[in-house]
Image (cartoon, rainbow, N blue to C red; front, side):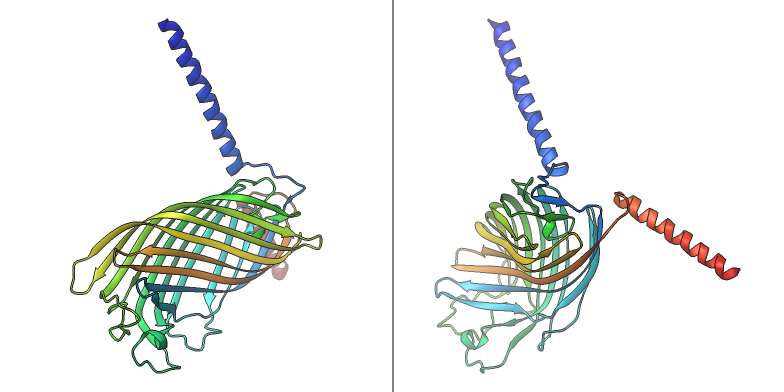
Length: 368
């Protein structure tokens, strides 16, 4: 009896081990070595692309008084456009951007952004860091006492910072390509979509030399009067959604990618004249993007926008702080076909050697 039980347990463990091993194998293939359906996705990994972009990133946050259904709405004072240039080859994509100061007549703030992403067949990993200095109260006329119409309430002392790390898994990775929309390494040949599962870590902080809530706020409209000098939120969450790219025969496409999730949030409030307060809660987040453009073997053009919105309760006083980061971008890229299917390191070492050999030949010609 004992030997039969032991044998049954052993066989069960072997079966579970085989299933687990197959699951790990399938997961590894989907992430790193997935085979794509060539009827839907065309591989352009042997093309080297150069690109240029014009983009505008902005940050906003609001302190919402839920009892009075009113809010203080802050927007970054620097809403100027930026330009960037870069290249992409296989898994490597690099871009360098600078702010131009264009399209912003009232620029009194400054913004710094850093972002990168790793695009695997089924998984998209993103990392982003943002620092915004200088805000203005967008609804000052409506929320402050006797505030003159047509004038801005600038808060150059307010600074916000955020750190974002996310991973998204696209289930229909054999037919749907996220890579075709960003790094130019693939071409979506036919309309396809995919369900998404994602995880997100986000940390953001807002602080000022004085309280984020002005003293001259209209009490009848906004009754929350804690003197908040700093508020930080650290959250980790999971969610899901759906993405789809619509493609025409002419190469024109439209893409939409939307997710919503639930997160666990830890909030810290630093108050003037009062002890710090800590609060833990569940809250919602939303992230998505939409774009349209043209994609062919050699040319890529894209116009689109993205947004990340997070709702963060700060305590039991009927107050939320909601943060929004948004971006609008237009990109133009051209792809050059590489003579061999080099790896990333081989491409740059080969081209560097060829350039040096050509330079040496030119010097020899001049000397003769």
